Length: 140
Image 1: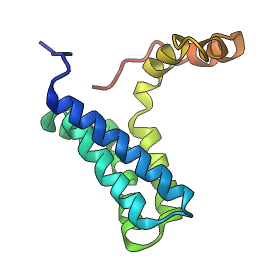
Image 2 (image 1 turned 135 degrees about the vertical axis):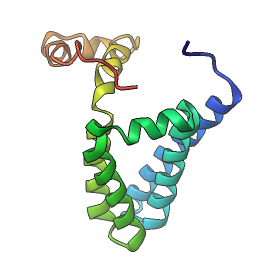
Image 3 (image 1 turned 180 degrees about the vertical axis):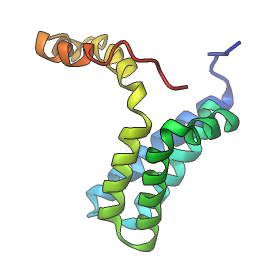
Image 4 (image 1 turned 30 degrees about the horizontal axis):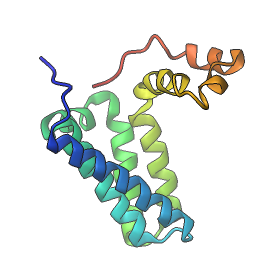
């Protein structure tokens, strides 16, 4: 049975994931600072591993359907570390989209329920875009 309770490990994992996104964003703002982007990547990956657990995260990243995303994210991380942050971030962004594409339907439902900006995502032209992907299953 899957537990959806919020224990301390998941709280720390969500915090690390948030700080990873923040450090990557600040690294991009500071003209692709490779140190900040590398720290953001490490924090993001460790945060995901703590949030969903070590074994499920390994199963997620090593799934046959996610190989392309995992390899491009890893290659992008390597390029950031060796000093090519722009090419590395492009490769990482592609890997991120491929890896987490199964979560977009869940994100769409969440965005439509936000009180202030939810009305924008409930407009017919935006809703038709989201409805195309609604029937797909979340990959974890």
